[in-house]
Image (cartoon, rainbow, N blue to C red; front, side, top):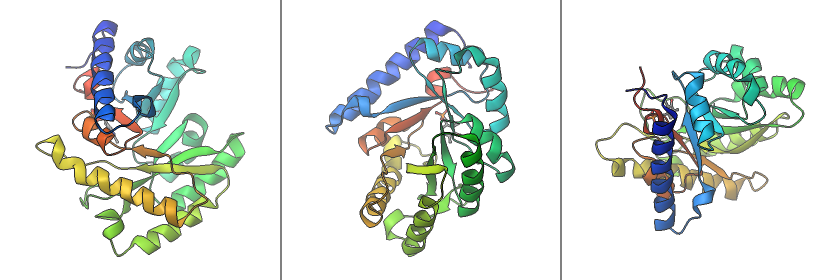
Length: 246
Ligand SMILES: *Cc1c(COP(=O)(O)O)cnc(C)c1O
């Protein structure tokens, strides 16, 4: 059931903060190194305000149009809110995306990177932070650069080459990687996917030393704790914060 009750949302956020902090501590990580992104897709501006009241400033949306409309309704909070695009971006929406979002998690092709670079240069005074979405699980339905198994895959050299090319584009700055784990019966089964993304990040950091790949955006409501244990710096929580959608 969807929630807009601020007390209920604050309680969910407090619970998730504790669980994420415990997960970080289990593996000797600083809990402050994990950003909780509240995924507000399908939820009204009131839900955004409730999350904001609980000190969440990072909001995730998967569609540009919905985010633009919601942001317009939250004009008064514009200076505080950081919108993250977590869904697939079409090139014809790149201009609007470059204007609104604090970070694009779903950069999935060189062509899209070129288009974003063009618009970001015109619209922004500082580079637009982007994450490269990688399909490390190999599921056919998943968006992202296809690299099932991550560093084990034979296409690794071509992927590194594409990353190097994207890194040369002005107006955008690669800050890390993002992935979506498959739906599994128990969260533990998602661990190899998260580990593969971290190992891929480590490979890129070693082979492209000019890049600062700090961010690993991975983990959703059902598997965020496992993702934090595997090094997530950003988890994207929808249902765990706002209840089920629609
Ligand atoms: C919807 C969505 C989420 C949040 O999913 P929950 O299971 O509700 O936490 C996270 N990441 C992406 C890319 C999404 O589209």
